[in-house]
Image (cartoon, rainbow, N blue to C red; front, side, top):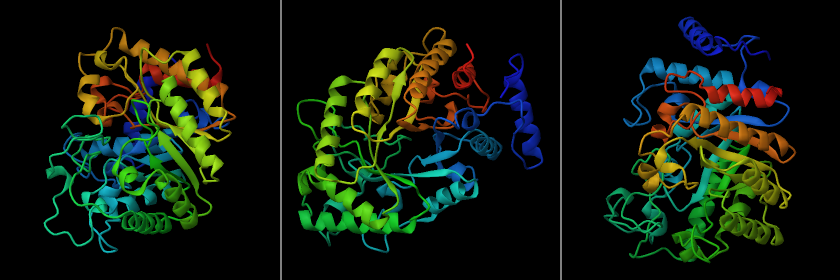
Length: 422
């Protein structure tokens, strides 16, 4: 695809506005799209929120405050540029299964998400089945407890040692990664809940959702322990990961089952990650792909660092999915590859780095050059949000499109990598 460089940005915006007025979306031979530029390499995807999935403004929360017109533009951009979607929140346990028992599910938002993907012929990812965050407290408590407090009202200490909320990609007050000292469910009870939840959710979308993040962020961030000290680990034991993958595979034998984690640019965290996957492989656990979130900054990683990370991950022999890509341009986040909402305020403070647009473009060019180099293993690249305004790190302006859905210089550099232009 030829890029008309002198006015490509303004023309994309004008064409989008014009076609939205008549109910269409932009698509012209001379306008580059991410999904077409990389169609010989990998899927190019995006995480979408509830507003986009339902087509209705105000469904997500007040944090973003998108008008209906803006949501319509967001939807048009998703359809135009991407061929794969992930849900930001609506398949997490806290939202899809907030109350105990078979009557405690809320499928409406998740159904809307899957329906959006099916209507637009997209490769649909499910995120996530088992996680230490955004899981209701009742999941870990004995059956029949009365006056059960919600996680948002419990004074808790999360896994990072603070009293702030655990990470959700919105920063909303959903379930936490918490230390809970009250009565606990037994191993057998928690396994049964995990089984029932996975069979219900995966079974509902069998054949529609092609990839599942079965277990999310189980590797310990710090110290020498391999696994995070979550309630899943404390109550069930380390085999909770194997059980989760087993249940998911039984629920949909054709789905690609993925383990997903962040901070794999760090050699220590990456070594733990590889050790965990190798252990699961030795047990014949059906881990079929690995997800590296890739929340990075305009300062790092460089080409050699990212190349080394993917080279080491390739030794596992599994497809690699870049699951939550963004590049933080805020001064406060230049040394962070973490993904914790409690640290998000600090990592997006201080204003933008100098020459932020150019540095963002340079870092995205670096990353996509590495992804293309490793395209035999890299099968999916997913941006965490469609534009800066709906990003969990919006103050860091981390994406290819600004809050008005206009392409930034970084978009141009990413297209140039795909087309081999200098």
